[in-house]
Length: 320
Image 1 (cartoon, rainbow, N blue to C red):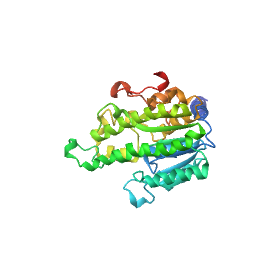
Image 2 (image 1 turned 180 degrees about the horizontal axis):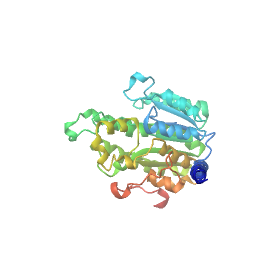
Image 3 (image 1 turned 45 degrees about the vertical axis):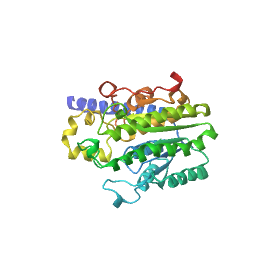
Image 4 (image 1 turned 90 degrees about the vertical axis):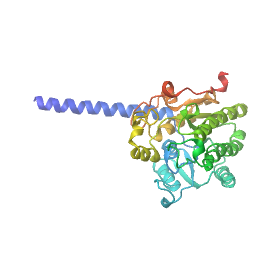
């Protein structure tokens, strides 16, 4: 009899854990909201953070335009294409639309937003994630020891944000609604990897804030989100090749999140009818997740590194 009791007790505990997990998922689904009818553009979504965001939005029913340069597997040493991401968006329950876009090419970006306006007649969300990472980003050396071509991070990482937001705003302003999210990081105030990288992220934060001031009268919100370590394909490869990275605050796997985590937070923001209260602010994604009651896909609460890495400069414009 005692063995039967032990068996029953063990299985009861498992059932309780399962039911709690289901309850938590249902609660977070309610927070993130039903995004059916919402139209989003996520740039740089062949893989990495952009892909994770696209999948999280699609899971809530959104139509997601997935942009990126990679259309076939042989174009990159890392896995992922825009077509694969779009297909997975459809499998998640939303609608993924792959559009090959080089965000350094203004004409391609213009054509993208013309397609969105023509086919959907609206745009609810732009996530500016596309960023050209230099191949020597994590290698040691001063800025004068690295090629001037590293300035391309400004071209696709800062200028590209402005161009995409310029086109998105021409759709959002007349409809008097919309959300523009820039993906940034603690590097905005803390030295990380190099001069150009830090300059880019600081600029992105300020751009999001000043856009918010001009968009506020039109009911369109603009924010910047700080991501910490995210387990993208590139990050995982770098950590595998450089085990010492695990001992650094910036790249300690214990504080990392999946690429879908920021997407879950953005989904909650897109469903927030009072989102204008946040417009103009730079936010630590982990802290917004706590505000909205969001965890990572495995149920973990991702920690904020405010104390270790610094605090955002820009507050929402309504708090000024």
